[in-house]
Image (cartoon, rainbow, N blue to C red):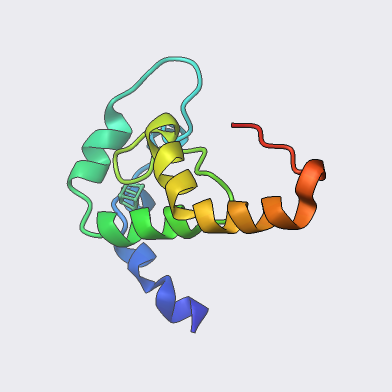
Length: 98
Ligand code: SF4
């Protein structure tokens, strides 16, 4: 089932790019627009974005042309209910690092 759910990955534009391009998806050092250009012509950008936003961790790479900084509020919005639930379970032990 999981394999089928991730079948879109075989059509990912980044999966067919060279290693140097893939490293540019993890922003550090010199900015590059190469990932966004690749994402712009990727046929599976929608499921890629959904997968990243459903992840239990905030994305730390460029996904569907969005930077981690752009993705974080979308990810937080997607997980707001889960965070509220954890906050209510932990009470004062909840450490909100927003
Ligand atoms: S949208 Fe971008 S990050 Fe996502 S699979 Fe396509 S090329 Fe890769």
